[in-house]
Image 1 (cartoon, rainbow, N blue to C red):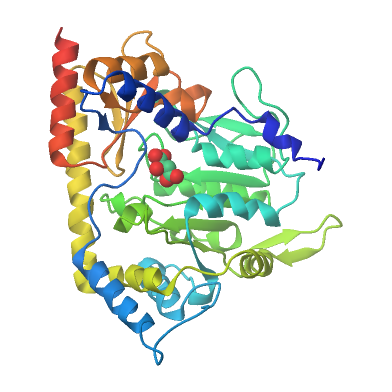
Image 2: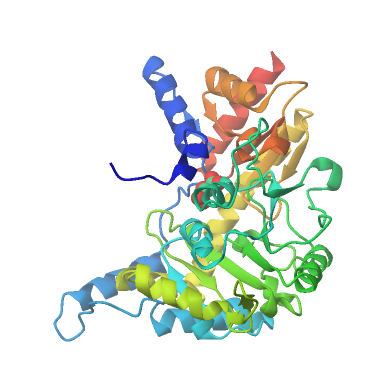
Length: 411
Ligand code: MLT
């Protein structure tokens, strides 16, 4: 028998969203007439916009012709997409990022896990609580932690709480750090890091020679011009940050799969014996060895969002989801619920009523309103007593869900 990776046995039985899916499936089987509205996993509902569809159709036609057919592309992505990303997402905002520092991939979730391949096992790792579970689970899988404790925390990681008490702004921890995970706009709380807060994190990372893994998958949902969209807007971040971005929520690509990771050439790590190494070179080595690139058709579709037409069209879809978020926030606030997020992020984070736990609220909402959300405790111990609702839905479903919740809470 082969030896397995024992670290997997430290994990909770199932990943959060499949576990929710399992419970919802069981409920649906018992209540076949229930019209369930899914506001749990943040999965987009609106179709790809016409500019993306047209670019993809054109790319399909090119694949049908020997003269324009494409086999393997560069693993790091086609130059047309890397250049568009560098120009429109970074250089236009004053961020000094070059096209060859952008690595196109099939998802930010995968990249935030895969990045651990190129770092050692003796780093002091800081995560927030609540936290996107992938950051923790992939560290457990990689053997960077001990077992989970009774609070469900992976031992060895440093957790910094994000709660209403600190306005969901994680405080800089005491002591040293080597790797820091930050997510803004935040999944799950829907909060954002101000320029001032992010500047403090960059200063802390630089003092410690640490790296920040900055997950900006929801950047497109920021409307407040004072909030940084990229960590590279903060001076000095090129020396201490890797940024993860995705077309999933920006352009409805959850089923299409395309994302990118930015690794500046100025970011350094160290070997066990203390020599400096360019992190870029290691990521390039890993990416070109373990990944064969995203399909041409997909990248052609992604590039269409950087045209004027494409940008206008995806902005309209984003505005649709953000109106949903506003409806959710206002409806729940009118019911005297404490509601956070949902202003620069597609997630609304609410305090469960009284002493109701996150999973109790999940069960109540499912059984009485046939509405699915995500229990806050699924994102960490500090998420207990909170609940996440996703704004990714049709207007009809959001209005109907709010109507049902209102009727239920009035009883
Ligand atoms: C979520 O609901 O938190 C996201 O959809 C998960 C993801 O993007 O992987």
